[in-house]
Amino acid sequence: MILDAIDKQLLQNFQQDFPLQQNPFMQIARTLGISEQQVITKYQQLSKKGYISRIGAVLNHKKMGASTLAAISAKEHQVDKFARIINQFDEVNHNYLREHIYNLWFVITAENETRLNEVIEKIEQQTGCSVLSLPMEKSFHIDLGFTLWPSLQ
Amino acid sequence: MAFATIMQEKLLVELQFGLPICANPYLAIAEKIGCEQEEVIEGIKRLKQQKFIKRFGVVVKHRKLGYQSNAMVVWNIADEEVDKYGELFSREDCVTLCYQRPRQLPHWPYNLFTMIHGKKRADVLEQIQQLIDKHQIKVAFEVLFSTKCFKQRGAVYHSEKTKQPDR
Image (cartoon, rainbow over all chains, first blue to last red; front, side, top):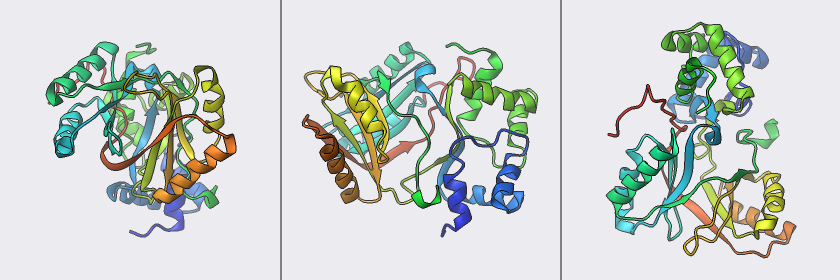
């Protein structure tokens, strides 16, 4: 799929302050000068083709219970297996392979500290690796979304 | 968990999966959790005000959009200078996240985490070098490029009432 100018605006310009009114896509359609149905169809396509993960809320983990950035050091032949073990927990929302002795990095978000520790313990038991847990102490960043095309701003 | 109402909690559980892409998405959510459309819209506004929601809108997949390279750059900054560098880094365009996290000695000496995205590895490395030159940084750091994404989705918060057992 080739992204046209409208697609790019739909991707970049509505990452924050998505319209909070009965027909949000109608509001977007008005600002872009196209029809509501066109906006809906385009977002459906962008979603289906994997350009957007969702239109929704990015939660503040700090207010939501307990979360941490965790890592384990897996041997190369164990990486895929351990990634699957880690991914089976609903509490894991990100999981990346990185170039480091600690090579599997994942974010765990749980309803409370007890459950968070339970997930960590289960991952340790099932992988045999000790988990490095690095909960956030302070955020210096305000999430404004992601600038994809600086010229569109 | 300090939620104002059960309804807000239900709403938050629903919102993390995203709105249905249809003409009346808030109405669809309202029907799903058993309230009025207005309560959903006002509820989201309140959750934003109360900072339970950091951002409400389109969540893009930057990898798919050409930003293939992402590096987590970790720095070992003296404790008394973390705030200063945290503020400096977070103001840079190339830095998309900037968090302070605890060291875990002896395995992990780094306490400031920045995420830097770019279309290519070389771009990311160049941005890191510029950051170092500009702020005359002399501390130890490491660059952890990601080479594979096994999972990327919104945090899934489960309330006591909606929780699923581990699969």
